[in-house]
Image (cartoon, rainbow over all chains, first blue to last red; front, side, top):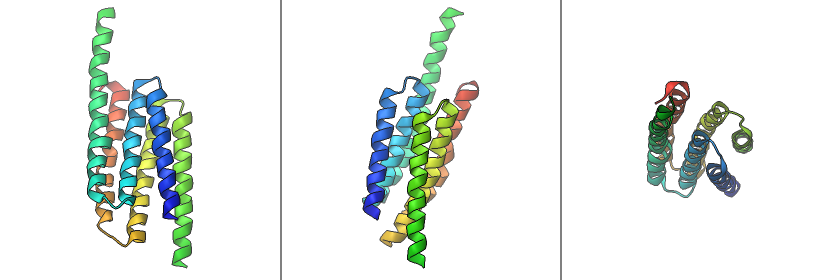
Length: 84
Length: 86
């Protein structure tokens, strides 16, 4: 039973990683990348590494998403200002 | 009885992950996608608690607590970005 759940989570990692590469809007790609590390950290719990899972959840899914959105926001402002 | 309930919970969690990922793939707007991610975070917490019970190691529940503390952060960042910029 737990093997099937691990396989489902690995399929989720693959699907969200493909989405993170192929989506065109930057915000959607950032969301999909955050979901990739979310699924990866759940898989780490299944593979008996709870400390790695905690670090991956806090940095990969929390901090990286916020920093990416901050960077997108800063560059969007720079792109818009010369046009106006 | 308890075994049956655990198996039913695992099947329901598998369907929840499946439908969340389908919503993420189809998602028309960014709002649909971020709500799908929020749903999958909460489902992941239940997966971790179930794994803690199955593996008989209750240190895993701490990981679920960290998830619960951090799950609002990404959603909050994306929501603020969509509203008026981070």
